[in-house]
Image (cartoon, rainbow, N blue to C red; front, side, top):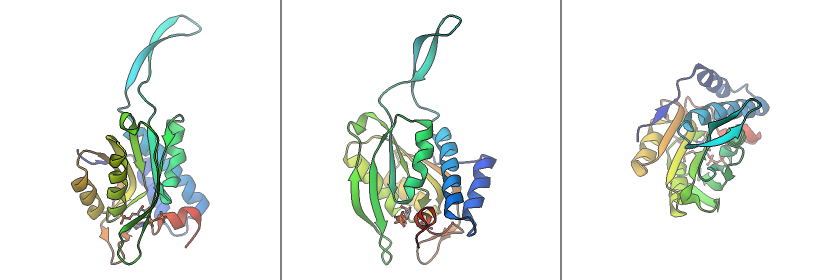
Length: 208
Ligand code: PRP
Ligand code: URA
């Protein structure tokens, strides 16, 4: 499926702000939350609806509501947690799964340390969230896990991506829908995105 790149000026503006080193954790978290709301709004535009009969103060009418099983939101720990509240603001009844992955500093390969996903995941729209798509190793591993548990309809939301990560994820999982806030230039020798924003987990949680 084609990759969707965000074009809204408000998303672009807020991504510029989170790149600045002087943006502290509190402001960084707020901006990531706002970006996630805007990206989620775009990515969830095809949620299915059904018509139901309701009563207004004036009369009976038939109107649309979201249909089907509740969606599942799956943040990749830790940094994906920064986008969770934004997506839950849009879909408050969504189920939440967690996938814990941490990149080995030498090999840059993801190490799995946790996985807990909602039941009946094969019947749900799944939204995997992680602000950073660098080599793509973590994203590929996360989608592997979701599929191994039966997940089928998968959207992946990433705020900043490197071309290498987009290629790796779409080569491994061409059936998913990928939404990218901004496509950056390249990876450096430590597999960090350039210009990027540094380590997203550290910036969200104030660690280093
Ligand atoms: C970061 C980021 C992604 C991953 C991207 O997590 O949040 O999960 O790196 O890199 P990749 O595309 O090369 O796999 P990290 O492993 O630093 O863990 P953290 O969120 O706990 O800091
Ligand atoms: N993980 C991050 O948090 N930032 C990068 O640039 C690459 C991986």
